[in-house]
Length: 135
View (cartoon, rainbow, N blue to C red):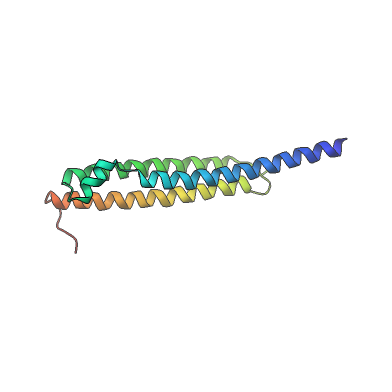
């Protein structure tokens, strides 16, 4: 009887880990694509597309910077969660790997948002005459 209960516990643990990994990957990929598409409100996107003002670019820069900070907070959360997993809890390293992958994806996304922030900040400063255009 003991052998069958150990098998059930092992199967449950394995299924739980596999489910966790799949959910983590799904959250990361859907979260990045959804957030990446809707960082700016539609009206602001329209204004920027049709010769936006310096204020429009400053607003976009601020929104991209906040999104980059939010993504960086997610990176920190995933990294801390991965570091907190003891080897006994995750002997094959599947959970840890999933969390590290999620952290890497969020780090990439945060970098993209930071670049967009820099582009819009530079455009706004150029429009206000604080900086010479870069050619």
